[in-house]
Image 1 (cartoon, rainbow, N blue to C red):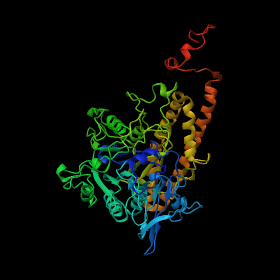
Image 2 (image 1 turned 30 degrees about the vertical axis):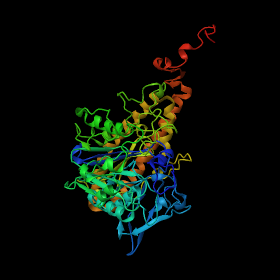
Image 3 (image 1 turned 30 degrees about the horizontal axis):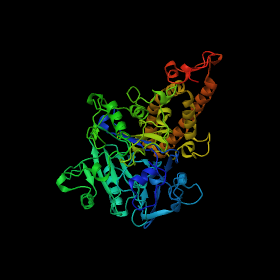
Length: 579
């Protein structure tokens, strides 16, 4: 995801796009039912969006009259703000057409175009991109660089993956159905923006659809591949599909893919099967391992027996397969832990070294001298670079969705939502069969601090913990463990009750699940504030106050002191030689 607006040229050269963007991006994971401990299908996504619109909204189901049209809106998540369409970083959209969450007043968003509406749409959870609908269809997302990145243009290119995922959630129940619809929409109405990877899954199977704007200026290119059952897929701002096999029943792709690629010199038939990554992109771009290191890390954690190397020959490597079978099946908390990772225990451990400071702070702050990550031109060599972990300080929110086909959809579909950065958040459970989300989740303006906002609650403590991270993160992690373990235990009771209600009165089950989400969220946020206030007192002025003892000195670790000017500091009255 990239939010700073680049040049206004029709087809943006990658170099110009690099100059106007910063190192941002997302990580997304799909775990098939045969690879999970409970038989659910899981899709996760960290939306690393750098203070954009962090609201997670409930979009209600709606009915429409024959002949109705659906507006398609521009997004600042693709290439930055477009004032001419009232497409801004915040709010991401203003319209009465999507329910009360987006009907916030102010200048209405200007449609890029309209498409025929269906008679009835499904309810779903929405963020920067569509998340999950009431039938347990779910999406993840990550931005990828593409050889061309055109801006939106009514009549030629009106769709980006954000609206594509929303339209699919409004109209589809299965992953295959969603992919066919998205492909048809791209080919009919045109794709603008960056390249995109969207994991899409239902209760039975998981697919990955990847898309790139077409050099033709209209339409778009796309390819989709099924993730084999029993395996896990991960993408991190680089296309992951390689050979396009016309004979593979578990692949779909745009009907003009080969024709367009050959016409523009991106692929030649004599080369063999079309390599999607090489055809539509420049590999990993100008920040080596920005994407591939995260792919390696996830695969190395879930399948250590494969002995994947963190080092590869180039950005087109084939060292990491499309998906892998994990050494053991994954639980939902296992996937949460993947997103919380900073390469701890490896040679890339961001909690270690001088840059981590005296208290092991794992986040790094990007500047204009850093690579643009998923969109930079590979011809620009970097003076230096930070490792790019799964958990970053500029993450807006992260979720792990679960689709569980053995339960009625309103109960089976769960969104575990973590606001702000994964390492220091708590994953709150919400069922898709609700009447709405808590107001605290649906309100957040990142320019105005508010205790009413769940995002600001989590963000405040995550930022404060950076003052003495090695101390305070342990206390946050302990509360995470306590709360998330309790959520899982309590959900067994909650879902049994909801199932009983659903059998006789689905409306009562819906209200019950809505009330649970409201109550559980409020109680959790109260505990989060309690911990924040406790840590403010406990580590005030960098000292330790506990057990009746006030202001105990903690100081710096000796090994870190040795890297500073401390060893040569004033230990005598003598002037140092040479001064």
